[in-house]
Structures are given as C-alpha cells and as structure tokens.
Length: 250
Image 1 (cartoon, rainbow, N blue to C red):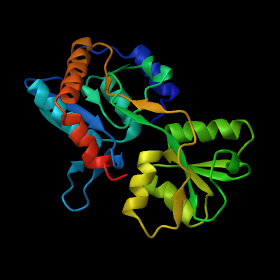
Image 2: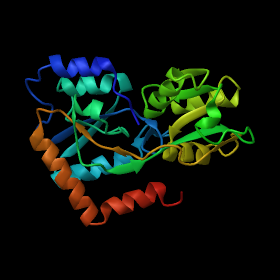
Image 3: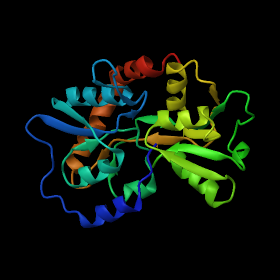
Image 4: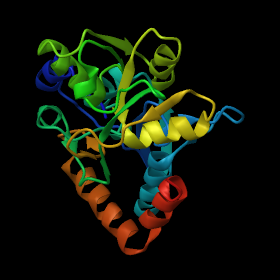
C-alpha cells in the first residue's frame, strides 16, 4: 500500500532510539485508519475496525500483551516508530526494498494487487487505458508510486493526490479525475460500501504485493515474537477466521 518518502530514509539514518515503546504488558501500535477494510474508524462508535486491527489484537493475545492502537497521520507513522513512540506499525504497508532500509518487516501477512477504478462504461479497464488521463490516488501509496511512474514516462496526463481513498474516488465521480489506482481489496470494500457509486474496478493490473508489520530495526526481539505469533495464529486457524470475516464474501 504505502510508499516510503525520501524523508523517512533520511530519518532512518539519523535517528537513534534510546528506548523503545514496549512497556509493561503493553504493545503500542500506530496505524492510519483510512484504508478500509484493513483499518477504518467506525462511524457510530469511533472504534478502530478492520482486518489489520483484528490481526494485531490477536497477535497481542498470543504474546500476552494489551494492544493500544493510535490512529495517526500516515506521514507521521515511520518517524514515530523511529523515535520509539510505538513498538510497531500495521497499516496495509507494502514491503519494499526501499522501506526495508528504514524499518524491519514481519513475515508477509497479506497478499494484494493494484486495480484501476473508473466510471462504469467509461472504457478504462487497464493501466494502458490511462494514457492521456488524470489519475487520482491516495498520497504515498503504491497506487501513487505506480501513477507517478506512468506520469514520468509521459503515459498519463496528471496525478491528483488525496489524503483518503474516499476523496480520490469522489474526484472520479465528479469528473475531476478519470480513474483511481488503488489496492484491489480496498476498491472492493469501497464499492461494496457505496453500491450507488457509478464506478467499477478492472481487476488486477499489476504484480502482487505483500503487506508486513513494521518494527524498529533496534527491536529484533519484538520482530521475532511477532513472527512467532503470526505462525501460531495461522496454525490455530485464527488467521483464516479473520480473513474469512473480512474477505470471505469477496
């Protein structure tokens, strides 16, 4: 999902963490809850819900830790981790070589792929169809990275960046952009939650990508524990139950 900026790479080199956030019996987690169905805020209760939220809470159960999750701005996630404010990040973060220069990642816990969302009947069904078009994206996601590469190559007219998926989708609905490039599960969740939206997605349009839980490079012990907890959840069938809860109907 998210694309690491050069600023985060610089921070990874210059920030020294004196003490990590893991406290007595508490796992401090940060997310950016604008990526349904992985993490989002329930409109009625204000609770943080989603696949990632269920998964990290179950990881906490395995480790015998209380899980405290903060919803913060995406651009603040990695700096907060590097500063030791949090023990880990879970936010639909795609594992990339660039990101691995700044943080460590757990074993992959989810496999995703990009799609193109456009107006129904608009004739856009692939990345090639974006030639000469304006593409909307959620800022600093792999969709943003892919659209930026297309723009740099002269294959798209422009890239419009938004803070949330909903804003990017709305730009297409009102005609301010021609299409959104976004993770397929997120597109499916948005369209299911907004059945009247005059949009459809084109299915997979890229190579698969893998999400991981980000941990400070100075916290190898926690990384090992998280990987062990993921393995336990898969062996016990709990991971599959969480997956079916959020994606079984898709």
